[in-house]
Length: 368
Ligand SMILES: Nc1ncnc2c1ncn2[C@@H]1O[C@H](COP(=O)(O)OP(=O)(O)OP(=O)(O)O)[C@@H](O)[C@H]1O
Image (cartoon, rainbow, N blue to C red):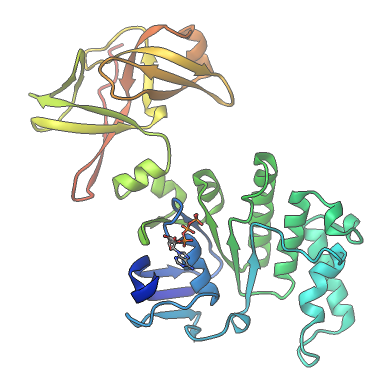
């Protein structure tokens, strides 16, 4: 089921002076898994609740919500064919896992309700998909948080919704279980082919799980794109900074050289004050400066955890610490230790102008 939002806005408060959503348009394709990502208060939950029909959009401007060809703008939540998963499991504590998943089907009006044998088959199939068949007779209190959330997923899918909406579905779980549940959701989504929209403020979760991510700030959509495109070509500085760690290099450009204290970098930019941004993986570390870059730094912290080593850097000419991620091989080659003095070599840098225009530049490689 595709979802089409047109001119949807939301204001709260007396006289509607508080804007939660500026008028926005959004198109979600049939079968997409969409992440709504943004800082707290950016309007993600409001947008999700409006899609659900739990919240009405403003009457002015006159907006529309379509599910496929169906105009659902004024349709009650129970008539929209939606499944929900919330952060807090909200399972019925006095019912078994099986009964929780079957609940929505068993309370359907008699004329619409599938026969008992079909309900049983459907519930078993869902429990099998989330691998909880063995636990069908347990009560929620006898399950882990991750298992409870899998029951919630199965329960929300029992009614075969056209659209599945998830509000911070994994927010209350620890990192490892979150990871596992993301795989469940992706798997169920691909197998059952519904359209999903989930809210998260976790960049990694949004980038890993979504077909496309809607980045929001201040009630507006900043960018809608695939995770790869968002990361590679952020449309403005907000998106760039929100999607990962950023190092700043501020200085004065004269004749193609940016200087800042005793640091300097060759850049092809017009004269004047400039602010460049670099991702941690775009900062290489070497024992010597190069022709194009003389950026002396010292190592203040090292964290050799995971696939790469995170190295914190400081310098008099830097307004704040930098973070570089280096490969373990480079970590060993440079014999990195705290207090060591090195030279940073930007592989790339980015720049955003006031007109939201973005640029990405490669720096001249080191000689040799
Ligand atoms: N019922 C309400 N009454 C008044 N203001 C509200 C209401 N619900 C949300 N808001 C305001 O609308 C704005 C958007 O809130 P929303 O909950 O949609 O943001 P969010 O991005 O989901 O944030 P979070 O990640 O913290 O849940 C916020 O400024 C919030 O304070």
